[in-house]
Image (cartoon, rainbow, N blue to C red; front, side, top):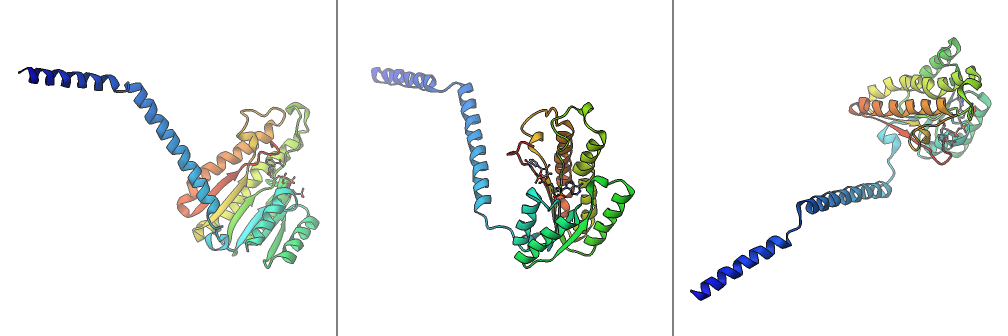
Length: 257
Ligand SMILES: NC(=O)c1ccc[n+]([C@@H]2O[C@H](COP(=O)([O-])OP(=O)(O)OC[C@H]3O[C@@H](n4cnc5c(N)ncnc54)[C@H](OP(=O)(O)O)[C@@H]3O)[C@@H](O)[C@H]2O)c1
């Protein structure tokens, strides 16, 4: 009898101790949230590592044999055109200066075994009779080509560091035409072929002004035009992914623009 009572007492004490050792619910919930967060971060790091270690995609095979690059005559556009040529893509080079276009075309042809075509388009004249004619030439140039990649790189940041009311209105209009209107028109010119072939990639060059900072005074129109590019890219990505077309907006931040 005594033995049984002792045993019951010990069991009750054990249960009490166990209850006291249990962590409170808020602590357990926080621990679960923390573990989920760590898992999400680890997953993101791992997927980046996988992307880094993956062999480069064969762009010709994945998207098509030709790429269209706007603004390939200097800066990033030139580097992109050379990089695509290095990866075996033929190029349609779209720019406003025939001599500069010829220069980049010659450089590519001398260095890589790919074909090039040049199309002279002043993108600031989009939505004018001259611009319409130039776009017609672009449509004609890409008709029948297996265009797999479009890089909408051409962009204007000038006028910069001025109040809206102080700048020349014509200059704003040129910026808006090049940065968003022309980008949309060139995209619309290349898309039908991509849709028909069921594959393609469109890379729009955005800007850190749309990401890093909530407002960008004295560069308001530029920042707003690049926000348009980012939003258009997001929406087109969803609109066209089912048709085999990838759309992305690349953002440069080192120069802050
Ligand atoms: N630089 C930066 O720090 C920075 C930062 C973020 C984003 N971005 C963006 O990255 C892209 C390239 O910048 P970047 O610094 O390499 O520019 P860039 O050196 O000034 O080159 C711009 C290119 O666009 C062409 N272009 C300009 N206006 C044109 C027009 N009306 N018609 C046809 N082509 C025209 C230029 O042709 P011409 O040679 O004939 O002038 C040139 O090939 C732009 O979209 C820019 O907004 C740049």
